Length: 404
Image (cartoon, rainbow, N blue to C red; front, side, top):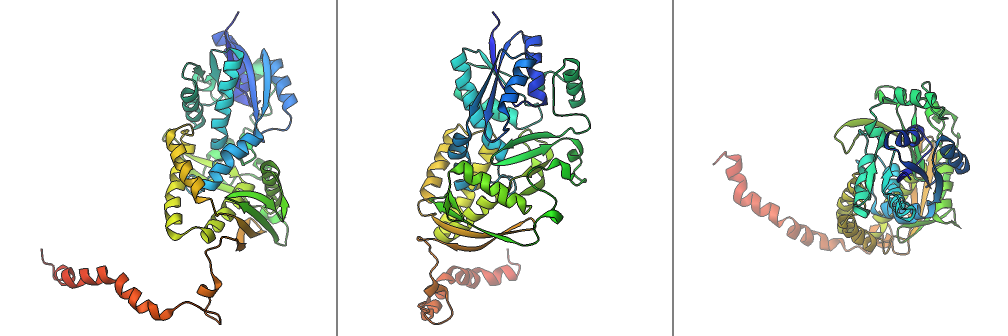
């Protein structure tokens, strides 16, 4: 009896070819394992395709709730955005998939796990490091990293072996999709000078076809977690789906930038992330109202570290747990409602309120009701400016005179 390997199976080009290749090259019985993180609605068809290609078993796990509650919302509370642009949609799904892959391999008695990542991308790092951290005894196989075929050659291999694929040489986009975003790679997108074609996008249409009038929405938060849209309470899955629909309709959420990959190369990345961009912007604005200046400054540092470790595949580390402790503490009073305006690809915060707001009208106003004691300002400024004044008095003249 052949040994078993559990393959993270998406139904796409590389993982479909991997089923045949793993049997052919390694004599392994392949268990195709698919994870629903808002990836693909037709999982029965994906299972059927895996079995038709040669998998001995095809399993599907609905992990949408775990994805939102255990990965997306913690990253949202952290304000994690890689290089200030990417909301980490694909990167957040990988540690969850790796965890489920390991659990399935142990349950099925497999000695190895496999994934469809290439040797140039980030996902190989995320899968390999996560699996090694969770179950170092499992062997990790990466067929697309090992077989040495170009994308065209992989398509030809599939065609020779009768492997049905949605990807053709004429439309060679590589898509990864989940609730938090959709990434689009390959084809003409590899030329950073060319504008992405409209047919590459699914959630966002051309801006000229978006509504001619703005739409206002309100998002309610409790301790940093979004819980309602326009006053209607929703669970995390439904809320993200609703915002993807609303913001996508107005063309909000398109990202096109040059990204620095873990492996050291720059790549042109295109994303659709309507709900993610809206929620991150709303959450950040609510924090501005409910966190102190010092909390906000330090949290910006934490957000950068948090985003980097997610991107770099280091979710299952003590460092993330340490950062998570601060993030959780910082969210204690991040509750309230944010009002946003969606129009022609833009998302603007136009209002916010919170029972824990540190904004006080009687202190901020210049009109009637002002309680700020302006007579205290000269003394404050005198003390505040003392170091600068002292240094200028002692060192200023020597510095200007060129004394050494």
